[in-house]
Amino acid sequence: MNVISNTSCTFAVKILKFMVMNYSICIQKNKNGWLTGQCEQLPEAITEGKDIDHLMKNMYEAITEALEIRREDLKKFYVHLQMKIE
Image (cartoon, rainbow, N blue to C red):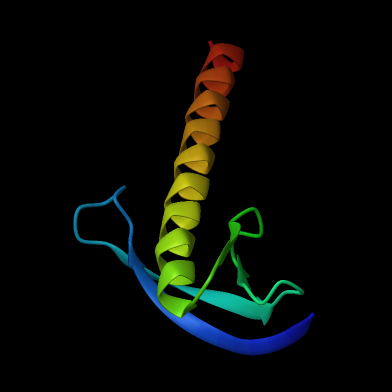
């Protein structure tokens, strides 16, 4: 796959009410002609779309889901850490 673009997209993060984070997305065109995007800061956030608008919608969903999973993992770690301290 050839890298088409390294673009920076801004997504609102729901964790904090007014927090906005910038994420870099590496975009490549795959063999079937669709665009594949992967977030550089959240490598588990990877998706594809038939065009750039479709890809960006899917990237937003992939990034917010990855952040939610990380937030849940952090909560579990915190609870586990508290149990060890007590």
